[in-house]
Image (tube, rainbow, N blue to C red):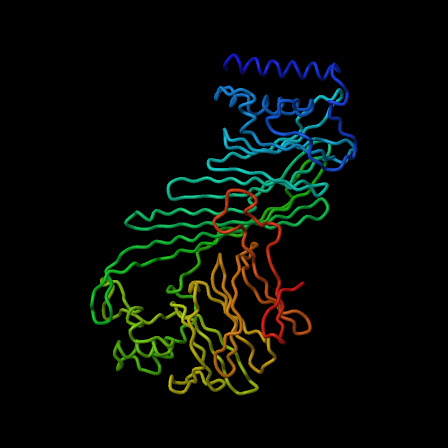
Length: 513
């Protein structure tokens, strides 16, 4: 420690002793009163004349948590305060009628944010009664909200390196009586890692979030998430004629992480865990690995024959089924050259399919989305499950832009009151897309929207039927401003969803008031 720094600390310590002894005008001492409303002290960082109370708090904080940092950097106290952002507020944290002081802020060396509670002891001495902090490499931030008897303290941290960036928000629920305790959990987390310069481009995106409920002295927390690993390689591919070409091939691996449920109770100054449940995660089976209906494949096989039809004829039937041109279809039917033999199958066998029974009109409605997000809708005579391609009636084809064929779900929901309900298609995991079509006499697009997955069920867009034939649309809001992750101003964590209601007069969903 240099001499000037030592003198500065010694002078400040002496100043505190002198001021606390009463040798200064009374009005220079900030004295809080019981039940004083939440407010900011008149204190500016780096002020040459800090209040007595503020000086005591800062000296206590540095002595307990940053004295070695100050010594190692050989900074003076004033120099450190110039990179030290803080705020002090009064609040009665434990309901005993006496106010405490909450100190929050960040420091640059190290990149650290903190939340501290001080009690004001007799003779206005300061006592630290609770401390929380977070350290980061890139940036860190802290915010808190008081909803008595709980204080919600959030720490935002960013970590990373070459080709990777991780952003995390940790939420702490703090409660005080004779002492303080807290529950900590991951409120929001995302991580991206990738190396585009590598011969094999591997990217990995991970996400996690939590929801919680508070009922008197009990708190329930549910946490869930997922990861998406994409491997992109350059491979030699062959078209049906055997012509070779280089093509970038991406393989996605989707994994849902375990869902964790915790239940706590506040008891005599402590949060005690009452219950813990963990639902194991699992890998989501990809589009081409089964798990969906095979009826498109078998319909083509049954109509065209299994032995007499050539590969070209079978592919043309598949292209026609989804309204794909021959030129576009040839691009979709390439396979790794080393996998082509007489058993090579170029028509996907597992195609998500939806089915609606229209008994009143004696017909069946079908919808299917292939692995290139091509939608086909058709109808056939009710119960005629052995119909040929020539006997079904195609109602239309569409291309679902920005869809993820690994995640396709269907809903039949009557919005307009027609005999045949509307077809709703939802696709995606992190960012989900919704398409709504009328399909009674053709395909007509009614509505399209997208939303961000929220909650442990990862709902981004969802249709919900209410009473009196009302249909609501839930749309998940973005967690943060695009490209902005390093401070709390980027995030909108308080509101997860917007609710829209179908208005038949305008034939659209309108925002509910």
